[in-house]
Length: 310
Image 1: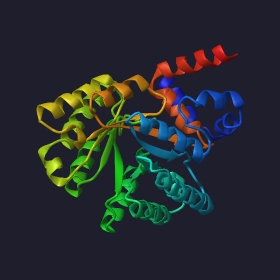
Image 2 (image 1 turned 90 degrees about the horizontal axis):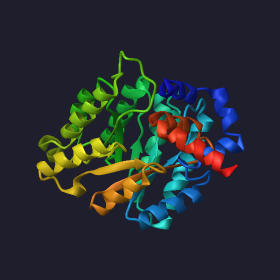
Image 3 (image 1 turned 180 degrees about the vertical axis):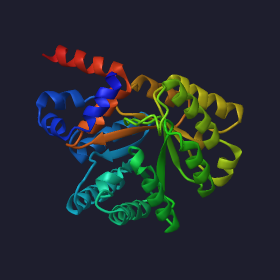
Image 4 (image 1 turned 90 degrees about the vertical axis):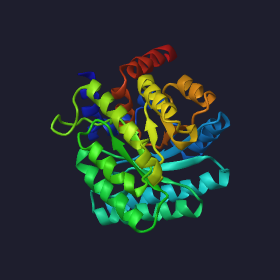
C-alpha cells in the first residue's frame, strides 16, 4: 500500500511543485540526489571514481510539455558531456525521453537524443536511454532502433523485469548487440502489463539476466548491466556468470547513489564492475518519490535523519 501511494504521489504535479520549493523536502532528497548543479554532480562522480566505481549522470527532469523545454534539456546534456570530458571522469549519461519532448513529437525526441549521442561519440562516451512507464516502452525501443540504424552504437536502453513483455523485448535486442540495463521497474503499473507480485518480478529478473548472459548474447556483443540493490539478485547473477565462466568485465552491476553504499564498495573490492547512477538538478521530486517507494527502509532513513537534524 505504501509503495502504491508513493508512486501515485510521484506523478502529482501540484505536490511536486510544492515539494521542490520546500527546504525541508530538499534536505530529505539530498540522500539520493548529488546536488542541483552540474559541478556538484561532477564532484560526486570524481569521488566515486576515486573509490574504483564508474558512474552514469542523470540531469533530472521528465514530462516536458513543449519544444523549448526539450531543447533546454538537450543543451544541459551537451554541456554535461563537455564537463565529463574536461574532468576526465569515468562516467556516461542517462536520459529520459519525456524530458526530450517525446510527448510533443517522437521525431523531436529522436532528433534531440541523436544530437546528444553524437556529441558523446565524439568523446568516446555513451548514452543510456532510460525506460519510463509502459505507454512509452514501444516508442522508446523504436527510437533506440532508429539511432542504431543511423550507425550510432554508443547508445543503450533499459528493460524492466516487471513487464510481461520484457523477455520478448530482450530476445529482439540481442541480435543488435544491444547494451541493456536490466532493472526491476519503478513505476505504478497495472496487472494487465506487469507482474503484481515481487516474487514473480524477482524470478523474471533472474531469467532475463541469464538470457542477457547467454552464449547467444555474448556472441552478439551484448554488454549487460544489472541494476539492483537486492543481494539475492546480485548473487544470482554473479553465481550464474561464474558457473558459465564469464569474466567479471563482461557485465556490470549498477546501483543508485545514496543507497547501499556498503554494498557498492563490497562488490568493487570483490573485483566486479560497479556503476553508480548519479542524479542532479532542481526537478528531483518524481525521482525521489520513486526511490522511497522502492524500499520502505528509505522512508525510515529519511525520517530519522530529519528528526536528528532538528
